[in-house]
Image 1 (cartoon, rainbow, N blue to C red):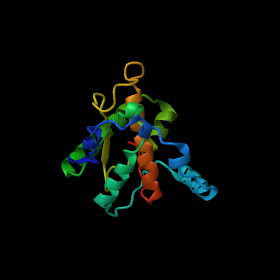
Image 2: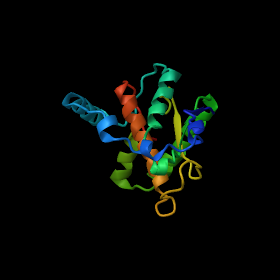
Image 3: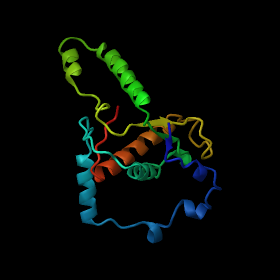
Image 4: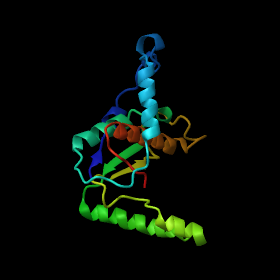
Length: 182
């Protein structure tokens, strides 16, 4: 499976000088006008968990661009623990669907009565219809950063990945692509 958006070379570059880590707000912080703020608010409200996908092919370059934006997300100690994998092989895609179905059946077993009936009717995945599958992982042993916060709050690595997924989601929606979390 190809690793999408491999930015590992960037993680091995020397650390930036302290003055570049925290840019001067007067010099480097862009101003976002009311129109931009309103459009961003619209995007946030429009972001939905999509389960019904079109069959249109999605260009690899667009997916790479979206992943590139996701990797600009903040991460604890600049650890960049996210790993994005494009699942393109039909056999592996079938395995993903099979695994989802098994996990979903296991989750259904936790419900009873009307709640179980309701859960069983939910469309929790559009994996068959989706033209792109991305698997997103958290690299808990990443060498990037200096380990800041990993002893006291190790879950922050996973939270950093969640932030990257949210950035990916907003970027995808801004380009008219739906996305679902499975």
